[in-house]
Every structure is written in C-alpha cells, then in structure tokens.
Image (cartoon, rainbow, N blue to C red):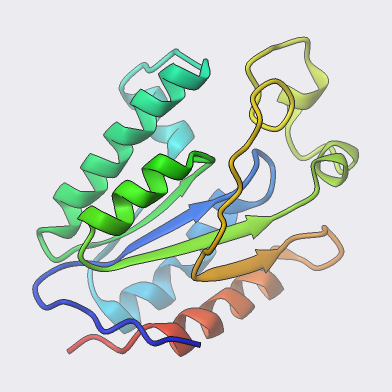
Amino acid sequence: MRKIKLKKNHGILFWITGLSGSGKTRIAKKISNNVRKNYGKTVVLSGDEIRNIFNLKGYSYEERLETVLKYCKLAKKITSQNINVIFAVIGMVDVLRKWNKRNQKNYVEIYIKSDLKKIINAKKKKIYHKKVSKIVGVDIPPEFPKNPDIIITNDFKKDLDYLSKILLKKIEDLVDKRF
C-alpha cells in the first residue's frame, strides 16, 4: 500500500463516496474525533447538509455534476486554510474525483461499497421506497470509483463502529502523521 506524504500548510480532504444509504455520513461523523486528534483541525460535511444549507434542488446528472463541483471547490478552499475536511457525498462521477486528485494537495478517496439491493432491503434510505426519480444507482448509473485509496465494504452485517475502526486503521496505514 502506498503512503500519502502530506503537503505542508494544507488540510487533508477525506472524500467519502458511496451510494445513498451506504453509511457514508455516519461513518464520517464517527471517525472525525480521531482524524482531528491525528491530523489537526477537522470539519465534517455531507452532501445532504450542503444541499439544505444552500437550497440546492437539482438532481439530474448535469445538476448533480454542477453541485458536486461546488462541493469540491468548497473543500479546496477549506483545506487551503490547513483544515481537514471529511466530506461524505454520493459523488459517483469520475470527472469530479479526477478534479479532486488534480486540485487537492492532500486527497484521500474512500469508497463505502454497498450493494444497492442490500441497502434497499435494510431500509436504510426512504428514497428507495418512494416514487421519486433521479436516484443514483436506480435512474442515474453510478460511476463507481476505479482506484480509490481505501475501500470499506458495508454489507450491513457489521455495525458502523466496527467499520469506522477499520477505516481509521486504513487511514493510519495510508497517511503520514501530521508534522
């Protein structure tokens, strides 16, 4: 496994991606204290929270692309101030992950891998049981990460505390400690 050598005076962007209901936001919140302790000032953001704050309503592929690019730019602004960002977002778009890799000085891509049928059966997200459209994985084909730095499989057989501990260990193995 490669080691990420951190660039000085920049925070780390921990980009947590996966299908809706895979556990991204809950895992992000669970790892935040350890990330803060090991790597410095840290904020946790989720795509849903940012959508609500800025009243972003579009859910088509094109609208999602525009919205998530805004998330990427927001994360870049925050990390440029030496603050870590744990961003939980569906973000199933290759071009945006590539944008992060090119434009973020300290970028860790984390994929929470879950089977859509298991998410639906576990009733983790109500959107899958409503008559709505423009859902990634249902109406919009997801562009799953091809080479994420870390993959955590959530099959809903293990609790999120356990998965969070696994993620923290993988982050520790991947990212050099702060200076």
